[in-house]
Amino acid sequence: MIDIRKIIIGVMGGGEIVNPGDYETAYHLGALIAKEGWILLNGGRASGIMEASARGAKENGGLTIGILPVTDPDWASEYIDIPILTGIGLARNYINVLTSEVIVTLPGRTGTISEVALALNIGKKVISLNFDLGSLFEKYREEKQLIYTKSPEEVIDLIKKLLRSSYNKGVGKYV
Image 1: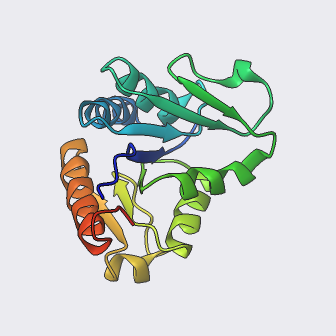
Image 2: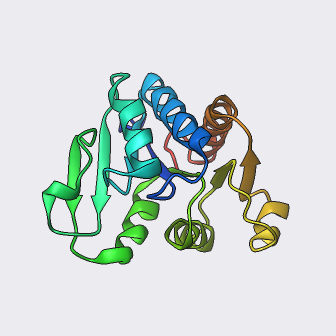
């Protein structure tokens, strides 16, 4: 039996853009995710990497999910199709990670780093796009659970390889 559910790709990153190029990178990544027919999931807020990636996906025909830390729907980006209001603050990061097939992380701060740590801890693959985590997670990089990339296109190619590998291991189902 073939698994026909949609693939959810988590895009994690800061609420503030430090490097102006990060906005364009996140937007382009979101657009490419949409073009693959995958669902983009992020923190849902109307700022930073979240806004940019959701906008890229939405403006390219994609579906977006935002896991918000609050109960106020006004926090959601206009580019989020399905806002999930949690009221659980940063604990929502665990929902982000558990719900995503693959985690892609772009530059951020402690919230983003917590998502990376949670994902690695539960065995998820993490693709880091222009986000140098230094030696903090070196063991995971060496084990190829944390993979560094330089472009959105490289991320998409890697996700395809990871999904094919997961699909083959699960005998017709993504694992």
